[in-house]
Length: 556
Image (cartoon, rainbow, N blue to C red):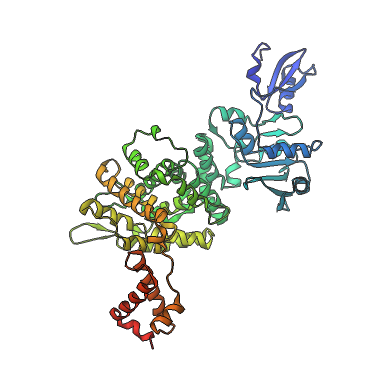
């Protein structure tokens, strides 16, 4: 190797020097030494680390841990190193040590006054969770090497870009598999021939990383993924769920689903989706059900990005996105809060919405019929789909709250389309009664339904979508959102004017199921503007009982 190469070419590498000249390099001290000995076997080189052009930058938690364990052999490994080299900040830190992983975690937890959880006693792995002053949390995992040495540990990992380590004492990089070079080339490469088959969940992880980093999966690694795809059936549903939701929560969910399908993995983890392929749909649909589903994911990502905080309207030349921002952009803050209200500590509401989008037409192959005029119909696919999606949610061990939200979204995903079509064809807005009933049935999921309906419309018509059709849908969605966020006590959840006991006393009623029906009727009367005082509620109740004679079975 020429000794006059510019120093920058050795950035973040270990080099071997003889009499001040660089004669070899490597990703680790041993690699640099072996490379030097192959050409200068009679000389003893000096092995040094060449610092990166820009110093590594990590979270404040990293600096605290480094200060707490100044004399401990400890390495930051995995994604946090990768992200630092890409100029990103990771709040999840993984550390590897020769031994005593859980003991080190306890020391750090005591030092930081943080929480500790033993993750895996067999692998001697502990987790520290530190709560920051703003309420956010950072995580640090401490594990004993998987193998006899740090290099063995790194070689046992999934992809080369995750197989790098930073020494906390010297801040030097150890890169035995040349992951830094793969980072520069935006390439995802497996660490070993058996990396994927050893743990098939790495198929999903690889697709997720490729999407989030904008990398290409190396051809040999792609073939390993295809070969190992059938083995995903042996992976626990919980691990599949976690990786699947990380994909859906990240960038390019549609491209990721397409990639999983091409790798032969999707039908293993979500077998219901296979039946969507080739199922034709009537006008105005321009895609079959499977392609339509992918287009919904893509459109939903565009819509959510346009309604996210910090979105710059100038960055789009798309007319439909521009209209979306104009009509609904004022609700960015409210939507941010909606998606911050997690139903589960480990998964986001955003991820659940994308999962609902993936499953929203899951029953169409089973509900398909053709009428006497040859028109294709999918009667009841919404309710049937809700049941199918709930079954898959239970198989993936989603929480009861998540399963309930998913079911509501899929069961009701056609309702906004009805109002949008009516708006376009008859110029009629949703009534107060329709708005009240929509949110009574869907609750907070109604906010998700607004976004899904818009994505569904764009994915249905594609480049045949007319501006007036889109504008009508946006007007309807704006009306629903205005009422939910700006007039909640008028239309969405009017305050009760009297409770069951008061109603029984006022109308001489006895307890029974019809009492609940009457209370709900009064509340709907409030929502539509017919009832505003306690006296009006009582008069409304009398009239309702008279018009619904079967209700008198509970009166005295």
